[in-house]
Length: 267
Image (cartoon, rainbow, N blue to C red; front, side, top):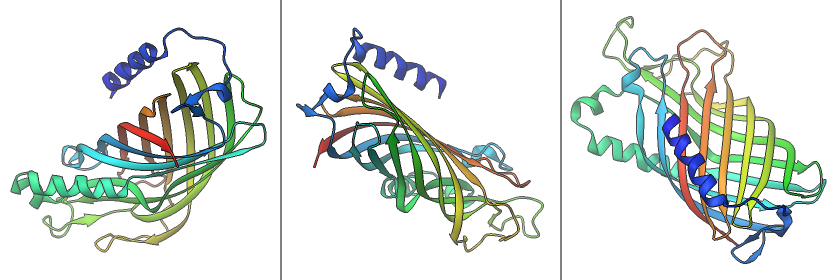
């Protein structure tokens, strides 16, 4: 992951070219000003999931190509609110199906795995600008996200070591919390955007069928970091990093890293 991040930074520098003094509201995206527009984007992603605290952590590594659809409405004046939405579920289902059909029977039959993704709702945030757009804009707001979360184990400590089991935390969660977003114009060709979100569940809608459910186990929290390099031609390169904050004592620290390349257009 460190190598990928390094190469991404090199690409950003190359795309940025010579830095100039220019306001973000002068940035033109596909020939039009970036402000006051609704955008729809599609991206392919190289996704990696890990759970280093699992009894057999190598069994919980998932990597492959997935996809994402996203939308956003951008506003740049002080006090105005922008919103953003990401959805990964369809791409993740395709990735898991590919894993099941292409791996050898030993891997498929083992059934040990970990996963974290959005649900039907997806990942939303709304942020309000603290000042009028200059070369950078900082905004604060809230996020409302849903998460599918689970880790399936086979351990020698279970009564039947061949039985598949999922321990807490697991299930389908709805969560909300604060979000900080920042935008910075690097050049007339490149805009960089990043956000950090912290989400606290307020409802677990579903538990996994094979889970050992414990309603007294503390709800997990979720962290999310997004960073994008957005070009004036509609193409963008992005990093998504999502991780589980396990507040109990059972072994589970699922993390997910996505490197995305996509195209976004006005609708």
